[in-house]
Image (cartoon, protein in one colour):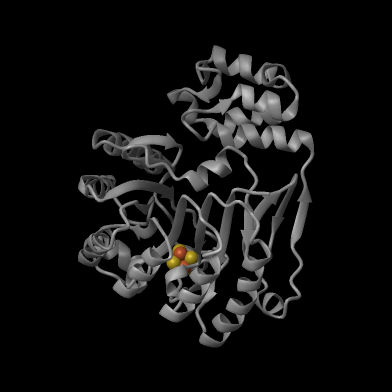
Length: 361
Ligand code: SF4
């Protein structure tokens, strides 16, 4: 039984220039067939004690009002305390916001990415800066008061000043309670990749990350994970389940999940999915895999990994299993043990990948 469920909606109204996710352009015939299958999948899980439900994509709000209503109605069998839906500004209409609210959605994750009109155009998104803030007002006024925004840095031609001014404007908006920041990656199969577009230099990228943290913290956000910031403790509980290496159910073509020591992925083969013939790809996790992944995910969080929880779960002592890398990185001031949690120091967070190589060995 799992407490966290992720549902993947693979459709988008248009495709952003940097995107190589598991998504495709919305087509009315496809969506209605897809809905029939996914609703059955959701119903098959009716007995799961879901605490956090996250509908992501793709763009869930690219579904029509009726399609969204069908999907949300199927999810009414659950009673999560945190219920998040990802949304894009151009297709989150007021009636859809009201619909989400009626079905118990209490958190919206909004794809904002940039507040600079020429960068919004460059990444091929189709909204204006003014619409971003009026949409946030609308969501809040409809009663969904837990609003998260995604922001991207490292975009071609983006300067440090433009990035920091965006973050400041976001942080000054009291209706936004959570911010996720991502460094642009140029994926081969994205429009940027095909056009051989280059992102900013590594030096500028790093500066954008560290200066971005400084701005968000200066305006009252707490960095609780490498890329995530919250006000008043409004962490993403669903994502915390990933970082705490809990099991989570993945529903729908393109989704990932982890249950009973098996990590799985529903490959992005929409035709097979619609015909009910899709087979999931499974990876059996060994105890060693799981111990390492607990470290890899847990060190992303500011609070780190609970030593007691690790020892109880694996029946092994964390400090013995990973004795050498822990001692080495405590000595180098990259790791520390505070309140029985192993966590990165502020120096360590910046070099997490190289710390993890030592744990892998
Ligand atoms: S970035 Fe998001 S909205 Fe844009 S195409 Fe990819 S999944 Fe769709």
